[in-house]
Image (cartoon, rainbow, N blue to C red):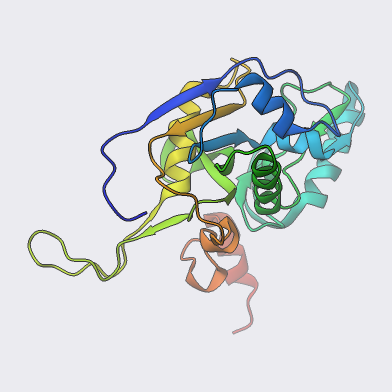
Length: 255
């Protein structure tokens, strides 16, 4: 879509039960929200996708063994370490996302398990969209998770994967009211919608899915994926390392 939006609403889907490996997310969502319409945008918390897909790692529930196991899981999910400060590790996952602790989560899950990110969030979004299409619903799907942001405090939700919606709204080549041509402006629409949806989902309210209604006028069958559309590649990343890591790399580099 390229036309301005007059307005949209963000609606929580309440009543989705605890998700377990093998659960049919499309069935759970449509049972809880029979009011869904074509062209709605479903914003689905990645955690329930991971649970349904079995993206869980077993760990001891207590003691130092738990922390040791968690460190092993983090190492397995890490493509490279971006920065370390104290116990906090900012890493790049195998998907390409830069996140604290590779997005591994220990909340809202049994203490004997850790929740990993979905292996392929774009594929997860496509699969859920396909399952909903089979039920007669033509909706877009965004798989979201929470991330921190460089240079700013606070967290916000972003898109890890999407289907049925273009991740970017490209304004390049357009002109502003003063006649200036836009050369680089591309809005990360799926990130913006993920952040808006979090306002009604919350972190402790157990509302893992929200609906953005009124933004889309039509879904996009062949929309590009979030990865690599929104994940900046190393060649164009000006801040690919933390300060200490960059200094160490420079110190050890051959002259």
